[in-house]
Length: 433
Ligand code: HSE
Image (tube, rainbow, N blue to C red; front, side, top):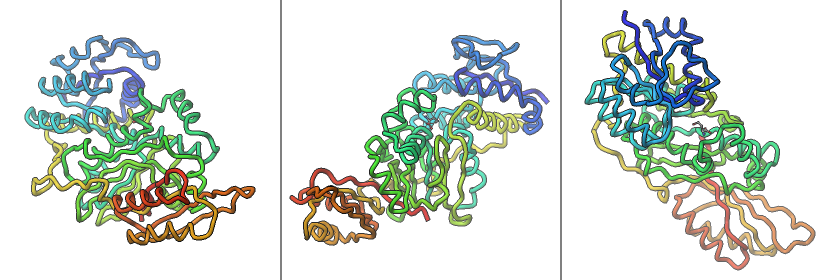
């Protein structure tokens, strides 16, 4: 059988990891693919001391790889959405299959890229784009294909999870942990992508499109970061039996599909609440299988390479079988209608509220009256004794489930009470049961 020839573009952390693992585990990988896989060219401006290219030719111009008639599969590991998009479209136009780890590219330009790939009869694979080494794309496409996915919730940004874990376990401040995450190389080039939830939103959009058979709709994701999480919220969450995680949540409801990334309080007893440090996890609830949890390294050279190479193996297998095999992605649902996407104001969830209140009789009654008028009940309450006769005390409430816009308008009324000082902090609460 003719070997499958691979060109790798980008020789950074993931590029060098991919080269190294493909070389080191060549025998096992070829056996699983049922065909020999050879890297024949690397496109990178410079070599990376982390990997020895041996006899493999390196070209500085990545477009040479896309135009190399010998290359069957182009592996795009340069990142970004401008040059990477041109490179992928060029490779497709040249009739090559593409494997990419680029979440931003797929989330923002995937609809166009998949349409071009379909016309050209080639595959575009992206397992490594979401949750690094966890085979979550394969799980959704193949392992769960019998199910209607009801919802999924994921810790899909390692940097954010590392920050929240350090804040909880060591009482460290947000800024201090972020600096360490950058030094350790977990964070994106622009760390606001991690802490403001953009990176997680890219990944969520991809998961949701597979879970619900909908087009990629990055502009529809509600995104809130973790930079405003205060150490006291982390502590109060613990006291209430919860943990704060930065989750990407996609849910199919009767009213429409929710797509949201935000800090979320979840019961500490859930397995996913105990996913700490830079690790990722995705919880998927299927109607037939029930809840399933996928856990592993969400970033790093070799974990990400593991996912990239799994795609190369799938493509190689299908090339060896004459091109059939991996089905093109169907982003549209059976009725070919784009379902209603639920705006955040319409989403229903429970809430944690923290406010600073004057320490005198009737304050709690005023707050709970406002909530009751919005049909929101108080499920749990913490009020500490005032410190050294301080005139103000923190008041912490867990509410029943409520529609976001009703809760927000109740918060406005609470903030307007003369007995409440400053803003009311709110964090969404999910049981994930
Ligand atoms: N910055 C990302 C993270 C890398 O922290 O998860 C993997 O996408």
